[in-house]
Length: 224
Image (cartoon, rainbow, N blue to C red):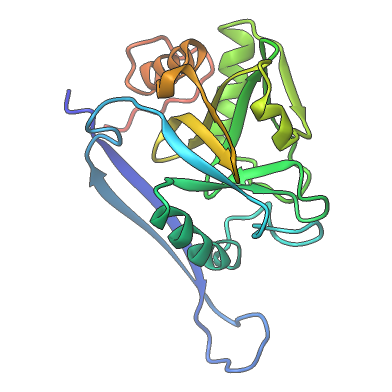
């Protein structure tokens, strides 16, 4: 097993003969597939993230819940700046209070706090990711963990009660977070390595995807 995968991406764009600011009269729907190698070629390791109090990803009443280009174009400059400082990505906070966690760049955020699996609630500013949903179901039904979908203050990440953090998405599935930084504050989790529960969730989800573990959820479709 190479650890690779076939990445499938659907895409829709407006392409009608309209120059003004208005909905397109025609749309083109495209699906392209790309064979990709292992997402972690050097091993399953934690990434370092920076919490931003300067930039936000989406605001209430906007389109933060949808996978639209207008949500990602404004994040290119902040991502470039944070990567120049040695971080993999940004943890974005809510646009109203600049305190509660929204997302990690293009990924959903999770934390183990007081032994419970916590993730930001879907209140219109974050994507209700498919991998996010899968992780919640596995955690509850396979690991019998208590789940919390709620507002998570960035301050909680620096407390002892927060033992593991990770993010989820289609490409990486589950990405462990080794450390978070905000100004002079820094917390390192598990010496920068994936936590025990993060590894269990990753092994269970990828095991189901590869048919190494029984798919009791009905997620897998065999294509012949």
